[in-house]
Length: 207
Image 1 (tube, helix red, strand yellow):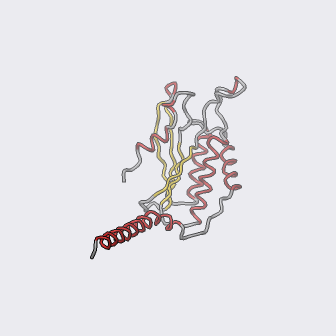
Image 2 (cartoon, helix red, strand yellow; image 1 turned 120 degrees about the vertical axis):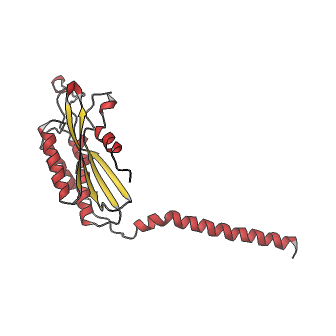
Image 3 (cartoon, helix red, strand yellow; image 1 turned 180 degrees about the vertical axis):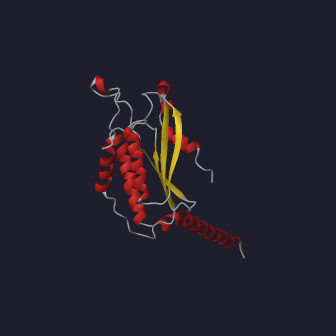
């Protein structure tokens, strides 16, 4: 066999090997996508339901830690989630606030398919700011905000998602996490923001 034919066979073998490897990598990379596409049905997100959840929270008034609205919202969100899943956990913790205050805070965690190792998490905060620094009226700057958008809207989306997850079975786990104490800090005092996030991250099970 002459050198020209040998070189040709070597190049052909390399091409076949390269094609086989490329094909195998491509299949592995796209497999998770195809797994998710087995069910082409996309459930309807009901905006009216989500908006009604926002209205329900706003009726409690401001939900800043220590307020009556805060306790009412905690009871309400927990009760709503129990309609959709039997796995609702309360992550209670305390925090040393301003002026020697001790805050009683609670992260609410709703789990769907809690036995599954592969999980997706969605987060929103349910507390509202205890002061309105940017209010145009000076008398309102130290008053808590109602928090229709900053607080209630995110929770409304997650509560509607909980309804969807109950009615549409999936083969992986989903956690809906409602964080507390996220908006507590005074302006520019970053240490006193995201209290629920920091506590959740520090105490999330390693397994």
